[in-house]
Length: 492
Image (cartoon, rainbow, N blue to C red; front, top):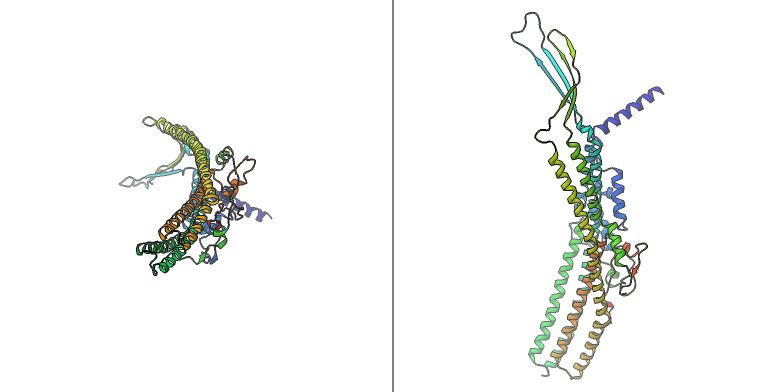
């Protein structure tokens, strides 16, 4: 038992030495991993673990096939995006810097020997003089350096969570862009069919001499322009899907497609918290504001280090000497003090104070900017929601009725082809404006999420927040982290 106890004590001593020598500065600590995961999960309800980014031997899973949901795309990007994987090493660097900050400066060992020529005939020996010294200032400043490094490690955690959150928002925006392109393609195909019918009717009447050739040519040009738009939107969708594939970590051509429900489901604009509540939420959840707060703490630690730096460098040590007659003597403790004549540390202190003031002013400016960002994003979201409501409930139904009446009048011979094409052109223009309003709505929703610092469903479920009455459009959507989807196909 004594032997086992002695072995355990040896292991404890070895572990202590490894900690002292800084050999634990490898991958991020478990506390770092938990902190980053908490920062992210508190803002986005997604299955993500930053520890997976450090599994170098983990192969990329097979590229998804079939229907790709927004949640699946986001989680793949958070696990395999190459830029995010590269940035994860900042956690290792911050942890290593924390360990390094706790280390004490290495001692200095010196030795000198003397041998005179010609050698003494009496068998003299060379003299030896050895000494060891240690600078005490690194011990004085150790706690302050460790505290500053801890704050910087927390900043690295915030930066990692911020990049992951922004990547999730980027995937959301790209997903919505693909949905918009598919809707625009459907609109272009509807327009193509519309002009195709007009061309057939015009060709039938032109054969009997009712319609002039210039009018028929105009209908044909409108039809060709609609076909060109379909091809352009097909190419744009292929480009956007390739960009989505790269966000998920794949460099191949996509083998997946969007689910039909993502394009056709009608979403609802929920009631959001009032602007005052949103500003309070943003002040608590904006990661850049949290990082700026830690910048202030780093500034204060810098002032403390600068004050400690004004202490003159103090070196202590001991000396042992042996002369040529084998006489060994031990000297007293050596004490060396650097005279701060040319650089007493006042400049460094003033520089640290200036950096701390800058961090404080930057925090105040950013705190005000958060309020302004939320107000601007909420106003843009309301404007876009009002535009969508107007197009859906008033303008588009009226245009549909105009098309129906004009086609009937054209068949009865009361109006010519040119008038019909003008009505078609106005209808198509309004549909395109409607699509622009939908895209502006989704863009404003992404901007609002970034301004508040929370995903959409976390915003609408914010606790103890007064709801702000907003326009309601269709039934609610249920997919997590998804913006409300508005479908132009649901128009009359």
